[in-house]
Length: 428
Image 1: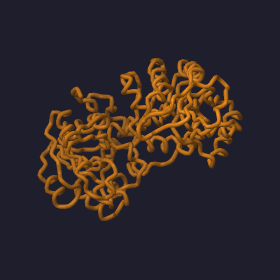
Image 2 (image 1 turned 60 degrees about the vertical axis):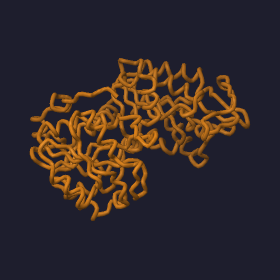
Image 3 (image 1 turned 90 degrees about the vertical axis):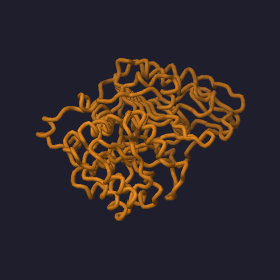
């Protein structure tokens, strides 16, 4: 069943504790923080502004980076509060801690419609340990609990799972609802043909998704270094390409399952190869493209897909009516090895007849860098969470939210209504 959303809860005058995902890139230039990508902040605005409009006292909590349980000024959420104030044109106050007297005093001083952002949850080691005492401290800050952080929903942490057991009224936000709709309903019963594009380095990261989607997809297109583990499963030489020898048998079984079910599982037929790669300085030795069907030479490694592979992918992608893309086609962070990823981004964006769903950091980054993000139906904010969800695994941050009562659901507006979209986005 659908989960209870903020539209199913009376929030007027209540302290609403909202788990958001503000784990955004922050760079410090001459001591000044600069948020280089505020996509996740903007994605939270429909939920935040709806709660403000309805008179809630909004308490936002998030993590940023990996401070390893210790306070780190460069991982403070204070710059996020400033950016949120700018985007909403509303004063967003900031608490110097997320629990204890400092946080409680800030929360207790809120008035209806006010917004407060707590300091980085992971400054406390108890957050990731899902410590009961820490969860209780968080629970004192809210009358209602809302999870709108899909990107962390696969983690059973204090702010995503522990605290929810301690607050009676619980719901998901509009962003979480959209994630569940597109990654759940749209991919469970997709318009056909349904084409899946998977890339990235490791088969181990995607094998569960491949196995789950083999029963749903019409074609699965494989790129990135994970393709070379499939090469090994076929007995093909891979030179020095990145592989997972202990996952070869899993790759072989996936190939066999795809063949048995009549599903096209397409591997690259040509590659861009180099003799050496320097990740630290983001450069490679001079490379070349292999011919279609040519083996990767001994001593060389594949770092991107070639033109023949892209031509085959284009045919599948252009004819699709549902597209799901997760993972780069090559060593995306190094110029010269990113052409395949940018080409796939363009192909997915060009198919305006399809429901297109994209997740994964590099895939999303390629869309933004190409200026194509606004041509995609839905861009997921989840990385590991989206993969686990697509594998069919229960996510702790979602399981703890009660299901919507059907009779009440029919009386509520959808998140696409005016209530859920009362947001004015200012320029970056």
